[in-house]
Length: 120
Ligand code: AMP
Ligand code: ZN
Image (cartoon, rainbow, N blue to C red; front, side):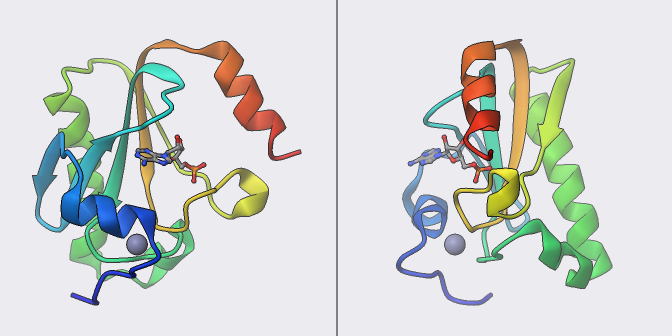
């Protein structure tokens, strides 16, 4: 596994964060600024900049990542939920360590609008 990047916030949270779920090279954490009642982030343990790199993932890693996203929603007790990835700064990506947003329950509409507006 490539070494964590010292300057990367999410590499630090992989190592030291409070994990809601962890397995198989992936962890889930709570988003610090939730835009829904339940707002989790799924991160690969290894540093990957963006979703674009998924094209180069080995098939088994891509499959395990999707399974982990689904398991995370189960662990959080979510029946219905949204899964979202912002890819690149122009689409609202602010942390450049790949992460999937898992959003369940009542959305915070004001914060969603703010997040969308921040991308112009
Ligand atoms: P994105 O804008 O798609 O890159 O998402 C980055 C997410 O990371 C945002 O929803 C932030 O609220 C969240 N975030 C930033 N810092 C932290 C932190 N220390 N712990 C948990 N989530 C964070
Ligand atoms: Zn990282």
